Amino acid sequence: MRRREEFVVGYFYHIYNRGVEKRGIFLENRDYERFLEYLYLFNDIKSKEYKEYKLGGRGSESRERLVDVLCFQLMPNHFHLILSPCKEDGMIKFMRKIMTGYAMYFNKKYKRTGVLFESRYKSKLIETNAYFSHLTRYIHINCLELIFPDWNEKGIKDWDRAIEFLKNYKWSSFLFYIEKKNLYNILSEELILKHLQIEIGEKYIEFLLQWIPSQQE
Image: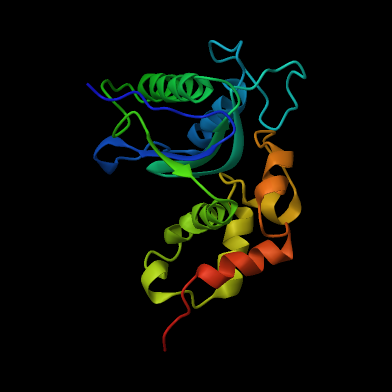
């Protein structure tokens, strides 16, 4: 029997998962949007099922969050989140609703049966603010593989194209880190600003680019 995870209130965790057999879990824009809607809607102790929600709307001011969301990125066959539980069992309840709700949506939409994800989800404790900052960088640049499949080994030749792509990738929290735009009302803004060791804006872009390998001529 799998050991039950222990998530401590106030600690940060890297949560990630991918499709079973590395299959796509986001096949069109509406799939990405639905997952983001779930990140907002299911992050409420009272939420039990999906209701229509205009993406980017402010929602109810009386929401009682299960977790704080500090970073996210959705890719065609996987996702990354940085979460911090607000309550005991908050993480478990939140992720159960996310994973079950999205799998049900996906299977119904695409007329399939069976498991969608490789596992329930994976988690890693983030022990320092420095690692939190680095991990946000890793998560945000992850999507560059969509235009530069071997960037992590060979570096980036076209920096302007890379930055422009990151700024226009809609399924990421990157815009908050460079422009303080919480486009989907998902992020816990004050917590990010408190623990991120890099200044929001151009300084964060410089920090991000420091990690990307230089192109070897």
